Amino acid sequence: MLKTDKFYHSTVSSCDDDSLSLKLFSALDRQCQKREDICQELGDIEHFRELAKAIRNNALSKLDSCLSQFTAKAQENGVNIHWAQTSQQACKITAKIAQDNNVTEIVKSKSMITEEIGLNQFLKDQAIEVIETDLGEFIIQLADHKPSHIVLPAIHLSTDDVTKIFQDKIGYDGPPDPESLTKAARKYLRDKFKSAKMGISGVNFAVAEQGLWTICTNEGNGRYVSNKPDIYLGIMGMERIVEDIDHLSVLLKMLGRFATGQRITQYTNLTHGPCAKDGPSQVHLIILDNGRSDILASKYRDILRCIRCGACLNVCPVFRNIGGHIFPGCYSGPMGSVLLPLLLGMEKAKNVPKACTLCGKCTEVCPVKIPLDEMILELRNDASQAKMGGIIEKLSMPIGAKVMQSPFLFSTAQKLMRLGLKPLSKSGWVKWLPSIPGRWTKVKDLPLPAKHSYQSEIKRKGSGPKDE
Image (cartoon, rainbow, N blue to C red; front, side, top):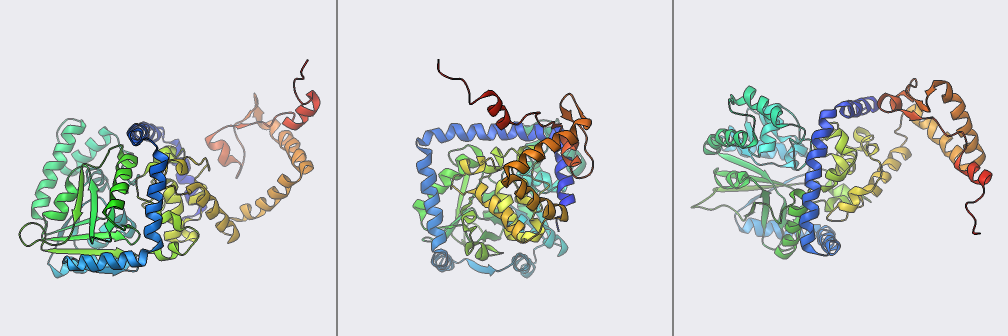
């Protein structure tokens, strides 16, 4: 369970790490600028956002029929379809496919859903080695970190950090520059691609009409994973489906622009099924629920529109300071603040929606117009209604509500607060407070409340300048 103190202290620790915020701000500013520049080519971007929203809503409104059509067509194409209700079932299906084919080494393309279900550790416990082939995922696997961003998993690491990791883990002895590091990773992974009998990837979108699915990468590793080994397994969340190719083309257009500032990802692979002459002889696909049916039936169903572009993380002022490692799952930022309580349960992630200023930037930038800030506020309300807060929160919130509802009590509280804080202040700022209030002053100074309230100043000076 994610306890309040653990979540708080992890947040404070991240805020104290100046180097982390510098890395995040630098990288995310570039991502945002690239997105803004490339989206101008589309002209009326709001039209495309509305279109993408309608396409995702259309698929979700008839998810059962879309999935039935997709699986029937995929099976016609020779794909082995597996249904998994839980993450544990998905992991067991994967392990059985590997064990039935005497597989001990698997190459895997970047996949958030496999992070969601903890697949790598599960397979490791079954004596099956999994090698990440996406450069970012490869780096954090060597470092034994979890992804800090759903698109840029190693964003928290500098070039010098990566150089040190490569030196320690793969014997790298070259210069600390990105090109040399990339070549070293490519050389190391090429041998893994040649020897692995099985490949695994996630699924960006599945197309109901044709029974095919797509994986989008910028390094070509996804194409190796899905074509070079004799056995290929895709794993997809049940909501990642669209009705036809026309709808797919719109979402690919939006994904590339909002995720990485590109017109389209460098490698967009379409998988139909096995091929006797070229490619894998076995193709499997796991369709995972893992709580998605419950979300679909809830007031939070709009979060299932998410296309995992990461744009909401890039603009989030909270994520820019704390990164993704304090979140109790693979999803982080605004979309993680909604998804994690729904996937893990409110009891385990009740404090995650509190890591939000409610500025609304995430909603403004979302390519499929998910009202993320409204959902985060609603999740906070759910936690409050379920009385999940600590004893101090349970006592202070009702008192605070009464004070805020009464002008007299509010004015009195302001005066008392100034009187109480004045002895602790210096030059109008309070630098230290005890106990719970000290959580504020530990990371920033607290301004001493003004001597006169805004309303009293208006009354004292009049309503403002008058016409002569």
